[in-house]
Image: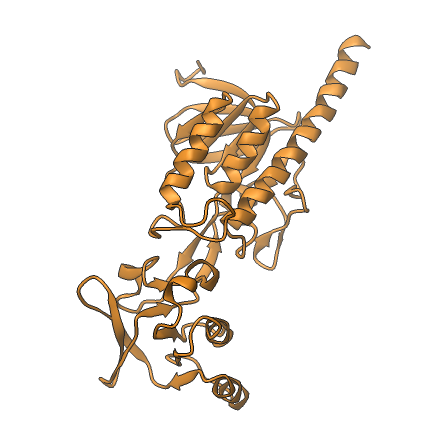
Amino acid sequence: MGTNGNPVSDYDVVIVGAGAAGLNAALLLARARRQVAVVDSGQPRNAPAAHMHGFLTRDGISPADFLEAGRAEVLGYGARLIDGRVDTVAGSAGGSFTVRLGSGETLYARSILVATGLHDELPDVPGVRERWGRDVVHCPYCHGYEFRDQSIGVLGTSPGAVFHAQLIRQWSADVVLFAHTLDLSTEDRDRLEARGVSVVDGPVARVIVDDDAVRGVELAEGATVARSAVFVVPRMVPNDSLLTDLGCAVENGWVSVDRAGATSVPGVYAAGNVTDPRAQVVTAAGVGSAAGFAINLDLVDKDIAGALAAVS
């Protein structure tokens, strides 16, 4: 117990975030016989979605079932899973880290992996948040096939929506870009028209939802356009405060990491959507494994140094 009466535990690695990246890193490290704790607040980004896709052998599984299976595998190798929130992570001159949880517990770790993902800032258009992850979606690789050959709308809430409409055209010949707040150039319009993507000008009032499904898009001037699904490009914001508080370098708004997930701060790693907004579940799992591999190699180097110091 700590001096304040709260429990204290020592680990080789504390992982913050139990999504695909965090759990895959935990799996590799636990199999390497490292003492691993994984802390997760239980708010996965893809929770609203009924299924996830693009992951070989796991295509179509629900995100909840995927995470449940992953947690069971990690527990089977002796890692500890903690349902809770990390309040702070602090480093020390000796290269160890102090992790304080919202529950009052303190964890000490030789290395840290942050896999806290990102959150989507959605446009303030009625109907978007209510249907998010179902028939108001973002990723065509995750959802495009399910809406193939249907009537699809794209909300022009960010400049990226123009190319998003071009991308989604691959899944359906009936795609409408609602310009909304965008001022489309002549070149944009020509390119969209060339591929058969219609443009509807004017601000959008709401996404029409009826009988538990998207039915269309209503414009501020009152006209409606029937649609079966709506794609939105949200503003993706990394949940990276733990990393930036530790002083990790940031480039173009995202914490910088090497191919193994190492940040600019020795002993601190990051993986998944917290550093890469394009990482799908399968990608996040892969970089989590790479980070786990790199963390273990770093710990081996520290083990060697410690052993030499003990006999000198």
